Image 1 (cartoon, rainbow, N blue to C red):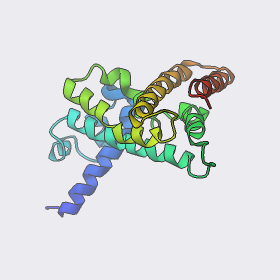
Image 2: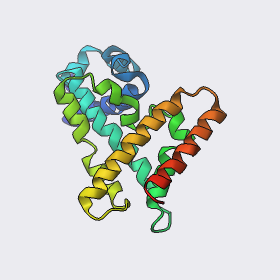
Image 3: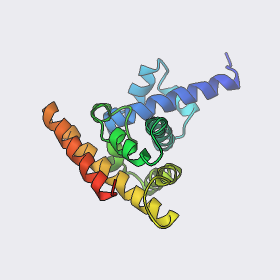
Image 4: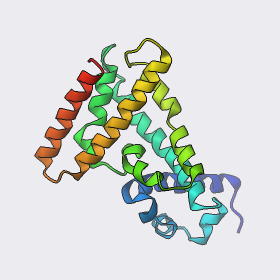
Length: 193
């Protein structure tokens, strides 16, 4: 039985969304095609009707996960007074809920160390993906030029991704909360908020 083209497109999108969460929560090696497809109640062989390789899925899933995460970050600044947007972004990024939600959180914090070991094409796509999101957040960064604001924003989010990774290692919740609060204060001062 042949399915309509729309069904194939919807199935592909289901696979991408599930992979976006799966790669972040289990890593690029832990999230196998077999497990992913089984979780979606699809066949392993059916995967290849949608993607040529796991790398192709990974690249698409990275884009999807960044899009999902960016929407969360943008919602954090929707209702803040003008001039408070960057502080709200830092607060949202270094929030304990974000620390606890690896599968729904920042793909850079979850996957950067693994992506560094992937083929150059995958690494390039991973690095290219956030350009628009960095530019959006850079609007709120102090700086003389757009280029300076974007560079500073890229460094800020890179640092916060590392901070989030370290926070996730801390077993004691009170210590983890304190570490995140200390980090927020550090970043507020670093960008002069």
